[in-house]
Image (cartoon, rainbow, N blue to C red):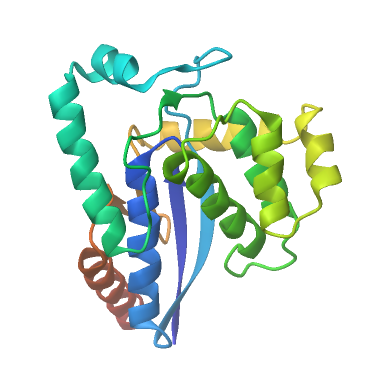
Length: 224
């Protein structure tokens, strides 16, 4: 059995990150038990300077990427189809607004700290999925602490402890340090999947692509 280290660099604001995470998990199921992995969720803020209240999604996409409403609708249809392939249900009307996600990343770092081993990050992974469902699936307000705490409650974590994190600056430095590390490593877009600290797979690839990469990399580890 070969165990791989996987850094999944992403943002809950990124719909392709939901697709990529689902596809990666599907690939890991296919290669098990011959290949296992420790999955480490790493932060990336798509909109670190976004102010309170966020911005209308269509307006934001037009300003940032130059796309019009028709192009945005077509991209949304593609993402919805790709999400369905991995069992993720996107909101048919999109996210509605774009928000700053720094507090999401702080909560994810907190959840990761609850794990007591170097295995797949159970608490953080569960919370990541809940946050993605809230934002990408239900278009909820990610500026609202009640929304974030509802996600914490959904996955059975300590809501009072999470509220204390949100009301403090805890885990902020850790999030910034991790973001800086991967930015210095050349990560400019997400999802970015880094395997064994050296093999990069970019984008929300299909499960078949991840499966081939996992098998090829594991074969290289075994041959070394």
